[in-house]
Length: 408
Ligand code: C6P
Image (cartoon, rainbow, N blue to C red):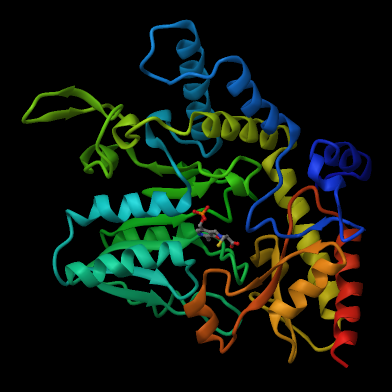
């Protein structure tokens, strides 16, 4: 197994200026990567270059600056598409996973009728639940859920798919439980039942090689900011033949080929779904992020994440009166661990850890129904990226003992 060596790690961390910050006079230990990752200089520089050297609008101007911006913007399209092994036409820039899923829900809605079913799981992020739920209420569709067991594993044998199911939409990796779902298998079940298969890749695309052709998913949503890129940009992949049939979600400039007073011919893919001036700086930053990830190698990132997760589970299991949620086996998880110190509110744990320079997330993690199902008010979540080290996890574990001390 190739992992990131210690000497490489030191060099690599220098690319992330924020990692040398001190918080409350302690070294920053950033373990909130599922919320958003830190940005390397290469990404920050790419964004600064755009604004300082060739800032202008894309696809419109006939001047040099606009040409340069358009080339860089389209390069970013191609890079991000290639990153998930899709064709460039099949990769739509959006504001992020949330907008990708909303775009999809609204665009697919026109083909659904009263009584049709949408199948989700009991571990979805609100972004892959609320859009479907609200449309289901308004248009008399039914939502169904694949259940999870006590370890946060899907019960696929008893899934409620049937001939009314039109869409199956599932998180690849749960942002609360960490579970990596068997999306290839779920996709097969969806397709055997003639349903469309949507993958929420917000927590998987940043951490493992994801190949849309291999997965055979119809759609995949993900966000740049969880994979070194800036906020406010993300992507929706869709199979070309499906995107061609779908209605645009937003109408306006740039998504048209020809407009008359009484009709409009829409632009080719992917621009048909990218109305208005896009997030140009964001897209260029996203492209630079993908370059950086490719340089490290997604297999290396996956392996390092697994090593850290194994170490975290071992070290956190040694902390007394601490319970961990999600799969017991580290290899069934993405690089994150949610836990609670028994009888201590996760907000207290999280803010006390902050006093020691440790940034983790505490709360419901936008998975309120899953929390309720598990009788929890929330959890503290430590989530890792390739710039994290085992020493940082050891520091988290020893600091948790100090946190417990406060409540004695
Ligand atoms: N989860 C977390 O701390 P946006 O906000 O659009 O970039 O991503 C939404 C989203 C969708 N699906 C999953 C599985 C996610 O984890 C997220 C974002 C962050 O867990 C912020 S709530």
